Length: 372
Image (cartoon, rainbow, N blue to C red; front, side):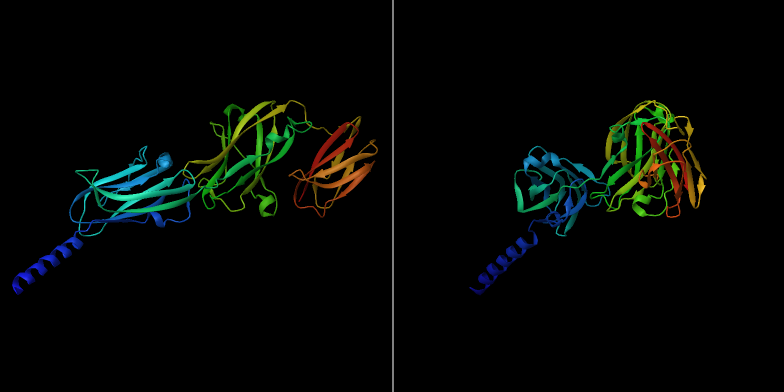
């Protein structure tokens, strides 16, 4: 009696041990991803183990998110990722492959195009009978937040909404505003792209290389040139890292030809992708710039290179208004009811170029000086 009993027990133990040895298992790190945002590719793995059976891996998502997922797969022992389509039913399949008693890691990349919670079921199916499930499935979900994209906008196109608008022969100071969103740290360039490249010869354009309005210090206006495609790029060729506070880029433009100018402000990443853009249009009239005459009197401003007082000689003009602005258009000095000769104290002004405007009724005269 003992021998048959021992044999039965041994056989039973063998079956149990064999069952555990050949259990088909699958697991994934997909559900452990955190801080997932739209438009950003993330890596995850699937680990399989089993008895040598040929299988197909399958990830089931909700059908309504099928168009919002981009999935790539790197099979074990390979170096290339291949696209894995997510069909209209939300199903993505990878393989076939053969299960082994050793754990095998399958690498994936996934990108979500919409903020949502993406539930999934991961399982194995017999490669010969694709409807036959093998082992237990794994369920989970990934929460995806919407990426806050960078933005770009400019104020040049708002100037022609003011009186008298944009005229030839005048300097106009304007600003390009960039917000970083969730793209902080990515290398970008600000670009201006003309719809008509031939118009690049119809104006001069400068930018403040020091970004004094943001960083402090002295304004340093530098010329900006356009290539044959009508594109001008601000910043180093490799781009500059976006910072949390964004960018305020001061510009100065002077048109030599009237007309309608359409252009695009765009934020170009160092990989060539355009992160943000806005299309703008400005109309320039042919009115001549301000001269230095009021009636029959010539308005004189001297010295033009100043390190102390600047004298404004009004000639026969009486009870005029005098305003002094910096290159950002900010009024730094004002005199009312001025007559004869007026001395302006420049000792408290920062180094740079300043513009003097004299107004008498409907007559306007202008000049400039530089504080060194």
